[in-house]
Image (cartoon, rainbow, N blue to C red; front, side, top):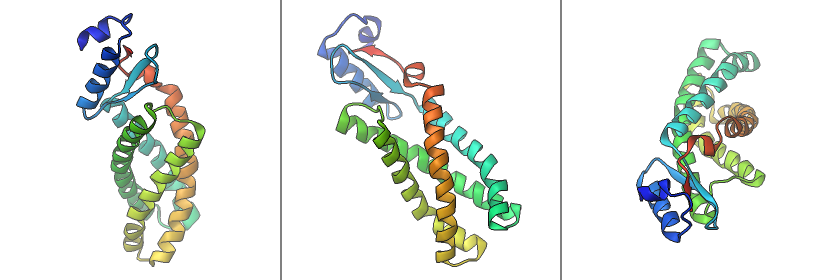
Length: 186
């Protein structure tokens, strides 16, 4: 297997198969590949996924806490608790969801490259799962009904849909897969 990484001129199917096995063997790295033997396979690492999740939530909290306190006319402390608890849930969900999404894309498409349509679907699927987890928590903490929590969460989701979409485009440009992954000639 290691010879595949050293011998980039090798274009046998064995190198591509070995690199996919290597990526699948490591539970935290998934190959972003193409279908021809002349293209390279890149791996987004566990460390990169952790950096993505943490940066996403840190920047979001810096915007969310003061903005939501102002918009929802709630004490900043309450929105801070909601923001931090939500960020914790969202960070874990972000990590799990993106790993699963990458696996699904790799199986279904042979690549983790996202078209614009896939990016939009990715964003909406992520937010739908998060909404289902957060509404009960928001209702309980703020002592409001589920409907009021749902309406509040819709406003929050609107912010995160736009933010998540823009953040992920920026992240992919700042940290391209080829810059963080391990290449192998396929």
